Image (tube, rainbow, N blue to C red; front, side):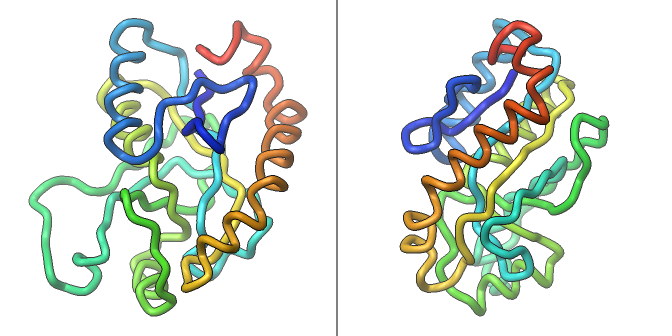
Length: 186
């Protein structure tokens, strides 16, 4: 099953699951419960914490859900906030962090980077959590549209059209075998 967030990030070959952690978790869990797919592949955009240049395509099989209050040592979590699925669907390049908030502060982005996190996508942790729960191979492929600095939103808007076109072409060319195995439902 090839997935995307939806709204601005929609692909003909992908099933939209919603924006943010909650919509993605609820909608994807419902899909997996009633029609378990062979795999989950999330396709979308991400912001870089500083080391990954804009315009780069990355793949990930690791996600975290670390909030800014944690890196500022103002909170803690008793739950597991990191997931790694090593199943060979795609190679792991960078761990992608998820939150319902977009980082727009260079110093905070640097703290995330120092934790070993490369980029952020609002939905990816939910995808990986559902995959782990339902024991489904999973990965993500992302186009870096912005740095997680003060101009994050403006950079995202400026690079978004190119990101969607590039991801569409890449998935069709390099991962077309996944599309032709039935449709977006995997």
